[in-house]
Image 1 (tube, rainbow, N blue to C red):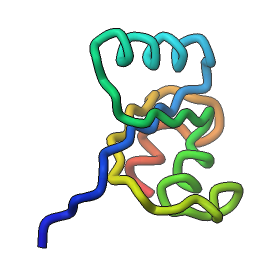
Image 2 (image 1 turned 90 degrees about the horizontal axis):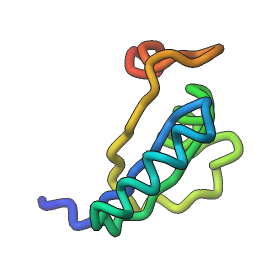
Image 3 (image 1 turned 90 degrees about the vertical axis):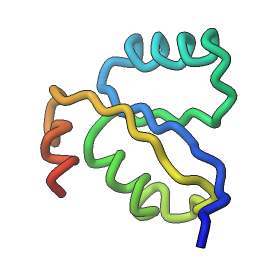
Image 4 (image 1 turned 60 degrees about the horizontal axis):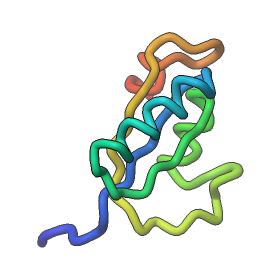
Length: 82
């Protein structure tokens, strides 16, 4: 069965400036997908698994995750292995 849901982009970076730069460059490149941003690994997992502060998020999207590897607290490698 083919998954017809739209692909959204989740940007995970503790530096707001980096997240904004990524978002602006995606838009400049013509990417029209919905872009979400979170600032830490814990938020990323909550977003992905629709829990915590994102428990009411509707699961309308498949996700492409752009993940900062080096973040305080839970870093990108931990997110990948969780």
